[in-house]
Image (cartoon, rainbow over all chains, first blue to last red; front, side, top):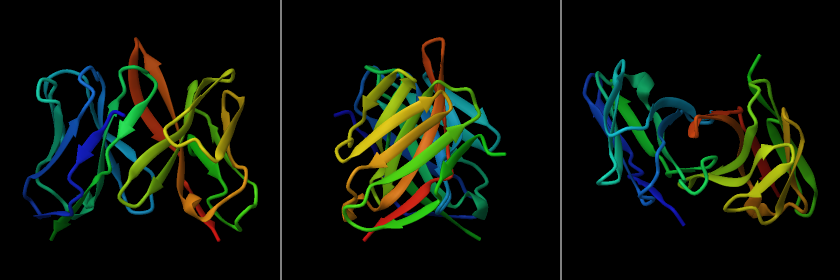
Length: 112
Length: 115
């Protein structure tokens, strides 16, 4: 069974700080990596997708992928209270391009 | 209008009852999924479908069945509900472009309570 692991948190950061969320995965040949944000009681929504090693930036968000070490991270710069949510890491299962495996999520709290 | 809709949004039922959760999408995607979410366990895949003629079991399909009535509709049934099926259920759709898994789009969820 392929696995995706995340620290459950809660991770607390002060407003304006950088929040760093980490994810490791077990399937060495995974090719697609996603970060979803989920507010309490709501559905997940995509924050970032990344497919190649290195960094990908989108506004205050940066996704980092290291396939050799099998980890993907999400950095949130200038954290805002509205960033308080659970962040889900998802990785495609290479055996099936149509499935992804979700991690348990990391709860982030941004303190004003 | 939302691209992915689920009905009902909330449901309370009793042990042993059969219930159906419905999902509709207007995104034109072929791929549809049913997940359940429990606290601390993330999203777990129940069933997924590539198209109307293709249905596949996920990691936790026991006690569930599905029907893909059309490209836009994917229903999940609990044949005989039990209390440990109490959870938040999400439907999702996705596309596959150039062999690469694209993002999944989620419905608003159905909160199910089995007494």
